[in-house]
Length: 430
Image (cartoon, rainbow, N blue to C red; front, side):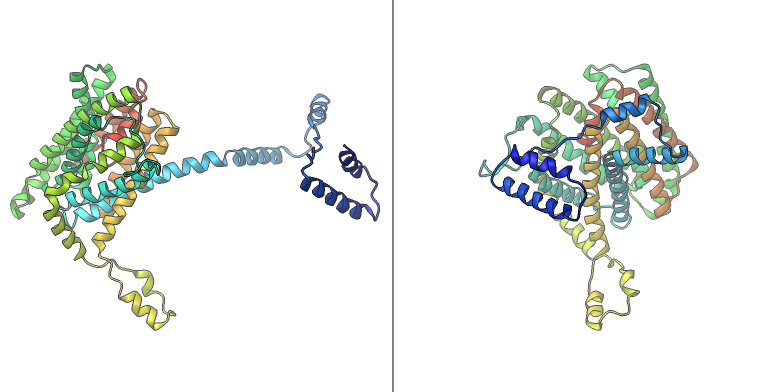
């Protein structure tokens, strides 16, 4: 207590030439007492009575109104910086990651449309490797995995469906299916979801039924118009049948709806362990790629033999040493392999963005953001790659996105599990 009084008395010492010296000695005493283990009680100043008196007697801020408003706005902005940063990170991962993923995908299938299986395998391998980190437990040799919250036998059906859906979705590009049409048709998954859900015993509102009916009309218009536009091209160049690609995508949507219902039942019984689902659905599906190894190897050689990716930034740098310029000129990066790596990394960013959004917001927000993201991806595909869609296809696309948003908004009011369905039921999230 003597030290405490000495510290308090130093605050009331009049300002003299010795004040600085006394303050330094007081600080040394306090530091010494702290080193000895004594508890130093800081002096607390309560300003609330003064603020209450100022408010009671009408002592207002004398600054102009504009200055007070700017100060208030500044305080609000500073206090909400963490929320703004989190929101920016989520939207950046979703729009930046997912849209860049579509760009890399189209850059690959434009050159090698039959590389869908290789693309799926690399995606599964990367997600399984990164997912192992979240499931790692050093105290459980030899596999060092956390105990399962869901029995492995429960995941087996999910794994088989997940593998088949992803292979079919990427294999559809071999049948003259463009990326814009791929986006439009996959956005019509609510049709099969409603049909499978009805057979499963679920019931839907009238607005959802109306939205799915409108969605069906939009998909039919878009698909039929695009098929008519490509019929002459198929006959002239001997391209694979567009109708076969449509059938493959439709079958994949049916399986996706079944898997969504199965996953929902699993989450209802064991809890929404989506990280465990994501890890095991990718890891245990890797052996299923064994029959495709020869074809994937051929596709990899084709991608490795693609034209090198241009490095225009190096051409504009003239002051580098000659040896360094020669070394940079010898770098050969096959463009298709670069796009393959870009596709895998951006898909991971897309998945993380959707997971963050689903954990921090409602199903309504997730539905709106993902539908806007699909529309942005469609517009970027048309703009960057010069895809020309027939007027009927554009009309069908507008109907599909509008009806899909209507269905999602209505469904999100009654079920929060829709947040996880976008993560668990599709290889390409969103």
